[in-house]
Length: 83
Image (cartoon, rainbow, N blue to C red; front, side, top):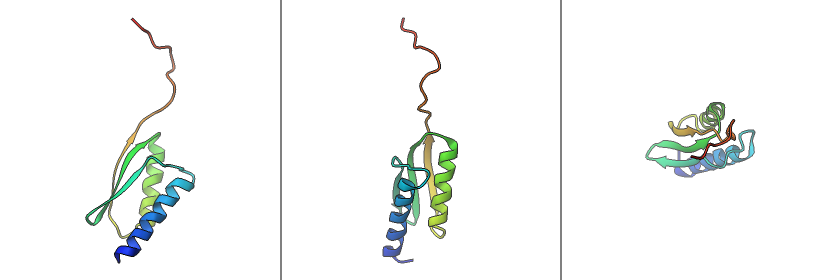
């Protein structure tokens, strides 16, 4: 695959992650040699799985590695106690 074609496909992946059901803007996409690295934080494990599914769908012949951390942003279920 040519460099121009892979850049186009990576840009298309960025667009899909921003627009589709995941609407995820916090995921960074970097090319590291012949591997694509996804990094960042996501709110749920399901979201992480969906992002990986979309990346593998878009980039079938490019190895994808992910360092996506699941960080829950829900409000606390009880008041904070200050001592």
